[in-house]
Figure 1 (cartoon, rainbow, N blue to C red):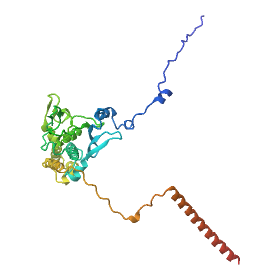
Figure 2: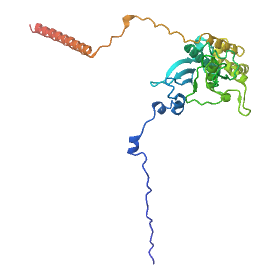
Figure 3: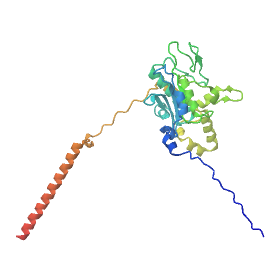
Figure 4: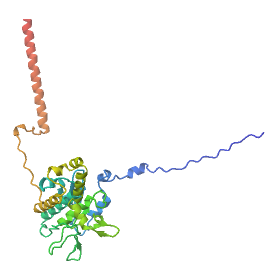
Amino acid sequence: RHAHTHFHPTVTMVFTKVVKNKAYFKRFQVKYRRRREGKTDYYARIRMIRQDKNKYMSPKYRFVVRLTSSQCICAVVRADTNGDKTMVAAYSSELAKRYGLKGGLKNYAAAYATGLLCARRLLASVGLADAYSGVEEVTGEINESEGYDGKTYYVPEVDEEKRPFRCVLDVGLAATTKGCRIWGALKGASDGGLDIPHSPKQFPGYDKESKSYDASAHRDLIFGANIAANMARLQEENEEAYRAMFADYIRNGINSENLEEMYEAVHAAIRANPARAEAKPAVAHDKKYQNRAKCNLKQRKNRVAQKKRAQWAKLARAAAAAAGSDGEESD
C-alpha cells in the first residue's frame, strides 16, 4: 500500500499599505469651519469674490438670496479681509409689517417683492435711485441694454453719467431648478434697477425645446396667478380645506379676484419708501431694579473679608451670650 501524501501549498500574505499612518495625520489639514458644517461652497464662492489686483478696493458685490422655512431673505454683500460686509438686507416679513402684504411670505410673488425691496433700498443708499428706477410696469420681459462703452447691462436703460450697480447672484447651496423662487427674487432685483447678469433659461415660461421665453407666464407668477387659481379651485371643491389653507388671506379680505391688486399695491408701496424702518426707542425701566455693578478682584476680596469679619463677630456675640447665661445658672 502506498501512503497518501497531502500537498500543502505555501500561503503568502498580500501586502497592504497603510494609508492613514502617522505621517498622514501629521500632514492632515482640516477644511474651513463652514465647509465642515456644510454651509459654504468655497469652490463657487472664490469665483464670485475674486477680483483683479489692479482693481484695489473695488469688490465684487453679491446679490444673496436665502429661503427659510418661514420667509425669503435678500441682501447685497461684499467680501472684505475681515469678513463679509452686508450693505443692505430685505426680509419678506417686512412686506407684511410695512407694505401691505396680507399673507404668504415665502411664495414666488413674495420672493419677487423682497428682491424689489432690496434693490430699491440699495440704490437709494448709494444715490442711484433716480438714475435707475427699474421697471415700474411689470411685464416679465428681460431687462437688457447696451451701454456707451459697448458692454451689455441688464437694466432697461443705461444712464449717460453713471453706470448701473452690478451684482452677481449668490444662491448658496440651493438647487437652481427651473422656476424656483430664487429666480423670482432675481427678477424682482432686476426690475428694481440692479444690474445682475442672467438669462431666461431657468425662468418660468421658458421652453427648452423651442428656446422661446413667454414673459406673460412669468408675470402671472409674479402677481400670484398660481395662488389665485388654487384658491378658486379649492373654494369650489372643498370649502373647509380652502378656509384652513388660506385663513390669513380670508381674514384680511383677500380672494382670488383681488390678489393681483394687492401685489400691485405692495410694489407701489415699496417704490414709495424702500428705507428701513426706524429703530424703536429703548423702553424706559425703573432704575431701582438695576443689577449690581461688576467688581474687580480687589473689591471682591474685600467683600469676602467683610463677610468673614461679620460672621466671626456674630459667632463671638453668640458665644458671649451663652457664657453669660451659664454663669447666671451657676450662681
